[in-house]
Length: 262
Image (cartoon, rainbow, N blue to C red):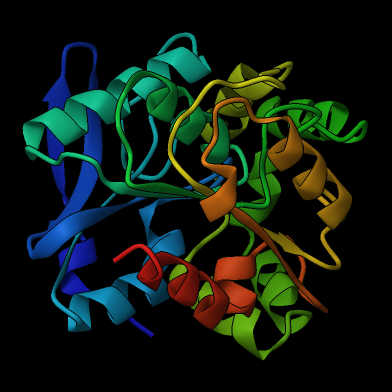
């Protein structure tokens, strides 16, 4: 399935980096999608299709070092947060709904700490302990040269063949990175810790029941630790029999969570 033309995006330059950005004008509040490590703006293709049909304003982009965006010599959550703020200022987006996945969640948290968001949807990510023990050696292996394996077509085909139906469609529209930069960029998220994060917008945490990277217990813990959050409007949703890519395996859950804040 092809990527929607409006998700093709354009390059927008800010100082030292050019970001590949897709923007669809429409009704407020705007929905801003922030992908996780090794991802890209097309990770949100199912949600993009759905809300574009409803005429909602949307923004999705490739984080620096990912997809078709430019690269930094050094990466940090703070630098990603500044990129997001520049994009929102560029498109005159105020009080957006932030929909974030995995390592994209810290970026949304850092922005919501400094600015007003209508709501934060946090999928498979939180405030701390985001890096499983095995991730550092694996990512370093791929950053140093292991990423070349993904250039082999049979490896891509094999990965798609072992996916379920929902993930097969997702991978048909999202390729695995074949260069080192996305793997190098992940290091900027290691050690992130904001267990007592002062944000004022309501939060919807979504976790996959079978997610080995961010299990439901972690989602419950970090929501409970958020300071100044509008707890009476916040919630934690666990999706049974779903892994880390909830937006692909159970897109209707993500879409319903967003719709609540429209």
